[in-house]
Image 1: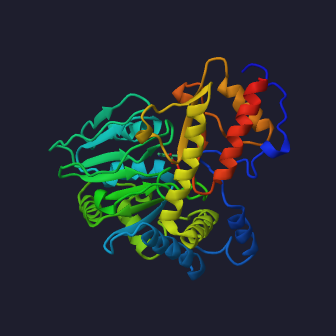
Image 2: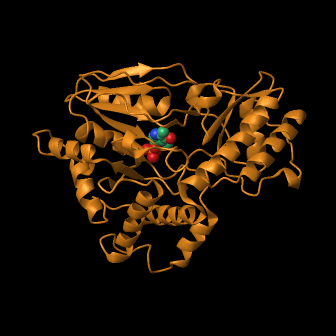
Image 3: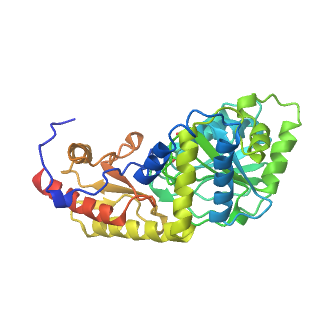
Length: 372
Ligand SMILES: *Cc1c(COP(=O)(O)O)cnc(C)c1O
């Protein structure tokens, strides 16, 4: 990269909290302090005992509450994040053939895992140009439709609508869940890692499962397909019903997620979060639209993510240099997703990120660009 100019932001242009990364994202300092105060009573104790099980139970109930999940949906937890869930779904959720909407790096990754599985048919992959999204196409051979609510790498969001077809609908909601509206009748599985919207830490996946999904999991579990125990969704369901996980989870992650849910519910739940993300994204996209050198990467305003903004820059402004100057000033992780190869910044607008801090950030960018 070219030299990083030495530009110091005046104090009033430095956001109160400098974390704008899209994952791991800003963790509430209050949650970290709360965890610290547990001292010797939580960290370093058994995940099979009531203290930790109560936290898992609170996460499961809190999610049901926040997303108004029907009583017969289950909140299932497992170790390994969304990437592990893709492997689990490849073993235990797809019967024969899946259809994937590929419109960025994450949605493409799940399709690649499935394509390599010897026990499944070649998946059907529907692509769209980067910066837009494709729609599912009903296909009688497909038994699982893989959707992505928010493509974190491109900043494109898509509405979750069940295709008029037989298969189950599995939605990667990793940077969406908790910051975007969703109707539980439109999915069978809504899964995510908690280090994005839920400002927790990595290493965990959480999946809301409909009765149809639970039935599918059981059916495949009872078939003669070999499934490694660690990736078994049936074992994950069985353990989750007892407020446990198949193997040892990161207790700090569980604690932070529980604390985050409590805080969100106290502030008004999903409605509060949606309003806050709408406010933040309005600030960022309006600024970019009015700017002479910055513009929203996603052309169609309806497809622009309310949770992760991708902002492109005119050729004369090197976004990598801009991001490095921001970092020098304590403003972190604003760089675009490298593999996308755009002259771009990517800014998280998750509920934990204060709209005021985003407003300050846009002013800081203007200040730096004028001096670059
Ligand atoms: C971050 C992300 C993932 C990967 O999550 P891990 O916890 O690293 O496995 C998958 N899908 C989406 C949409 C993401 O944003």
